[in-house]
Amino acid sequence: MRRRALMLAAALGGAAPAFALPARAMTFPRDHGSHPDFRTEWWYVTGHVRSAERDFGFQVTFFRSRVDGTQGMTSAFAAKHLVFAHAAITDVQGQKLWHDQRIARAGFDIALADEADTRLRLRDWSLVRERASGHYRAVVRGADFALDLRFDPTQPVLLQGRDGLSRKGPQEKQASYYYSQPQLAVHGTLQLQGQAFEVAANASTPERNRAWLDHEWSEELLHPDAVGWDWIGMNMDDGSALTAFRLRDKAGRALWDGGSFRHPSAGLFRFSRGEVLFQALRGWTSPLTQTTYPVEWRVRTPADFYTVRAVVDAQELDSRTSTGAIYWEGLADLIDSNGRHAGRGYLEMTGYAKPLRL
Image 1 (cartoon, rainbow, N blue to C red):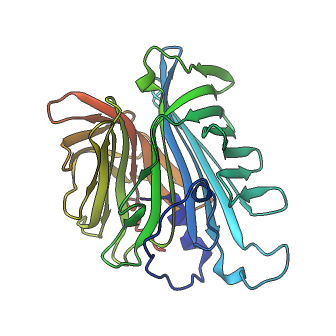
Image 2: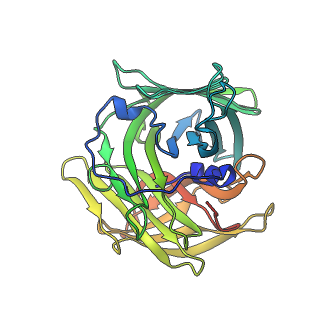
């Protein structure tokens, strides 16, 4: 469900009234591209790799946000759409998160969100899907890190919710169009403080070089009583894919929950409201913001009862200079009810430093 694009909407103001989204059949490659008629949209890639006996997590997010107050303007300089990008690398052995960000108005060959297919650019950052092969390539050059990674699909697109229409709240207008591409094979190069790390396509432990892509677009996601959400997207060791989320009110109660589980041979099971439960087990307090985040959870789903455990506690992202939000997003392990390692992916938690106001 997500993303930090929601936080951006809070800063734009003047939003038009949202409406209930109709069911529709997704068509590809068109729906890999941008949907500028919708207020908020994001493409989100997370993953984990091993190189030179070191483990890394990474995330790259591009999001587009429509500025409703400028839509009637005819000037080429009117900021009708903003394009934002965030990227981060988690250095597991170094126990450190590296993060950078970009922002620009769409146009002038500086920022682009193509409608025909996934082709996103923000200055020297990009995320592009090659139509012939279906693979993605992300190129990011941050202040202290860089990545040039390719993501090759190994499974079909996963339509979240009801054939891609994903409900996010008690009201019908709180919904999005949403699909995922789990179990992407990763290879390429990471750089950290000038040191290059090669990620091999034929690694001896291919389950460690996996990524997950989400693409989502909507008019409105959050219920007025929602202060934030908790979300996981997990590439499982057996090739399965697990998504689970909940939206919270100020008392910590779930306003809405959902998710899905897809097994390589048994197929897709979509979770109904009330079937997902997040129970916090352990907290970590940020020395920077004094915000406490649950970094270990018990997550009940119809597929199993799982423990979700942060690989590195300190994965808080402070984006007050761009989105105005502080949140936790990072690499986490998935443990099944028998205590066995079941997968690895990303955990995202928002609304703990302060409620989101959209």
